Image (cartoon, rainbow, N blue to C red; front, top):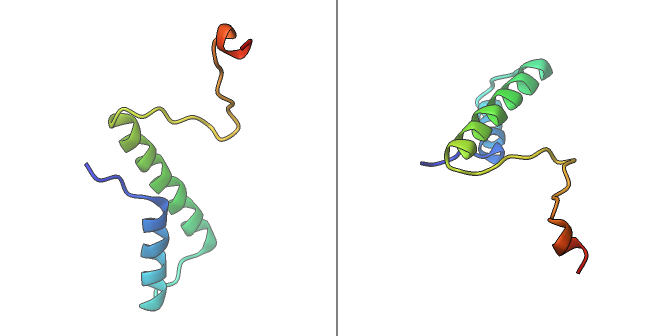
Length: 66
């Protein structure tokens, strides 16, 4: 399974702009969010765990005390 990246979304927008297509900022934002959610679902389906950027990894107490 190939997982589309946010870079690919940016490339799609760049190509569209070169062809004269214009999008309102709200449409770009909405499309970006939708693309990210689809990408996240593909990652989860592939067995990855997606965590928020602000999340800090937690390790067991015995590891942290070493």
